[in-house]
Image 1 (spheres, rainbow, N blue to C red):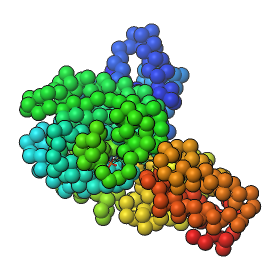
Image 2 (image 1 turned 180 degrees about the vertical axis):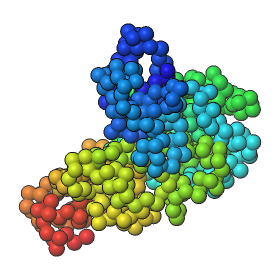
Image 3 (image 1 turned 120 degrees about the vertical axis):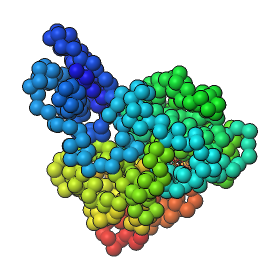
Image 4 (image 1 turned 90 degrees about the vertical axis):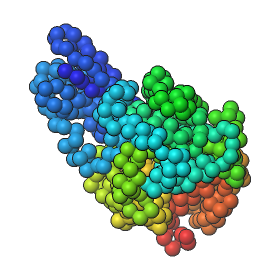
Amino acid sequence: MKIYVPLDSAAVALGADDVAAAITSYAAKAGISVEIVRNGSRGMVWLEPLVEIEDAQGRRAFGPLSPADVPALLEGTLKSLGRVEDIAFFARQTRLTFARCGLIDPLDLTSYAAHGGLGGLKRALSMTAQQTVEEVTASGLRGRGGAGFPTGLKWETVRSAQASQKYIVCNADEGDSGTFADRMLMEGDPFSLIEGMVIAGLAVGATRGYVYLRSEYPVAIRVMRAAVDIARENALLGEDILGTGTAFDVDIRVGAGAYVCGEETALLNSLEGKRGTVRAKPPLPALHGFMGQPTVVNNVISLATIPVIFEHGAAHYAAFGIGRSKGTVTLQLAGNVKYGGLFEAGFGMTLGDVVTDIGGGTATGKPVKAVQVGGPLGAFMRPDKFETPIGYEEFDNAGGLIGHAGLTVFDDSADMGALAQFAMEFCAIESCGKCTPCRIGSTRGVETIARIRNGDHAAIPLLEDLCDTMRDGSLCALGGFTPYPVLSALNGWPQDFGVTTAEVTQ
Ligand SMILES: Cc1cc2nc3c(=O)[nH]c(=O)nc-3n(C[C@H](O)[C@H](O)[C@H](O)COP(=O)(O)O)c2cc1C
Ligand code: SF4
């Protein structure tokens, strides 16, 4: 029988390696023939380690599993969860980008192709560069790294730039708190990212690509490196992509762990071996990027979504979603939530649906107090904002941002004053120091929040002024967006700062 045991970091943190070892040892003792496949995660973290058995009866799931469950698992007496596809959390999803994640052996290129992989690349190879960019534009795809910038527009800028060398850089720094979609994708379906990068190279005329991957993701680094080797051996990368004479190759580069190195220009500096500080824009990386050459910088999920757009067509992709938020969003449910994990669905579900219905509310069973959407720079949303549909413009109108689509849930024991101070501290620690509003402002901000929390209410307008200066005067979104969590906490929960609503003017 075939047994799938995830190699995914979350599953391993919850004991997947121990379960795999227990299966090997028990099967050897009991004379049971097993083939263990280390797959990616199916995204239901509360069920990890989620193990699947595939035999004559089909494929069925068991979890969360511990080594003590292994004898019953192999003797066939353990109660199964049934098919993963029938588990409510999974059944409600529209899996496009994550269609193969957890389903296949991440490093089996044959299985990748058998599940739709390479179909998109083959179609792109039959198109001109301009048609390829137009297909991406027609899909409505917007960058999933945080800013939601239209991917087709970015690619067109690079395609039409004149240069002897262009680059594709994949931003796999994934520094936002509560986010893990990039990691899960790279660990579970690395060829989709490679395929997306190759298509990007064809579209803009780039022959070299880099994946800038954070050092805190050792499993993703290992899987991506192995996938690149396999891709080279099978002409998915190299001088002669699928026998067409087109060249494209990818290197994996490991970052050293600064949050700001996820910002695209700091990332490029770091990739060039320089200190990771932000570059002023313009010039845009699309025109003056890696080594001063035109460069596409895209997030992992943006690039890994490209193959499915080409496989099924732009119109198919654009049919999901709402308004200008087309396609699917890969939501990551984290924090104090009952059913944490990755949920991919068309844009448009309400925040409340996601937190209460899909996520099951808090893990502690207490009422939800706040949800921080979009990582450490995202606003804290109150339950009275739960009607907000998940969409870029919709969130903007509600005073929030979607960012990389991470949702961190807090119950009613959370102290929003302490969380606001933490957000400012985070900015002070991670600031690259290039501009004054962020470098000095964040440190003064920590002090000012502490003053308010200690009863000095005269400091409230000072904090509001400081946030205005940071928002309007910072060179990048680290300083520019820190006011989102700080002011949303102050305005939404003034009592947690020991002040009244009337004292908060903004
Ligand atoms: C402080 C800061 C950190 C960022 N971190 C990331 C990150 O970890 N991953 C990412 O894809 N984008 C990150 N971004 C956004 C990138 O600058 C850039 O917009 C993105 O890589 C572009 O790719 P996309 O268009 O596919 O989203 C960050 C931005 C800022 C200001
Ligand atoms: S806002 Fe902060 S991180 Fe961004 S450039 Fe200025 S100092 Fe650097």
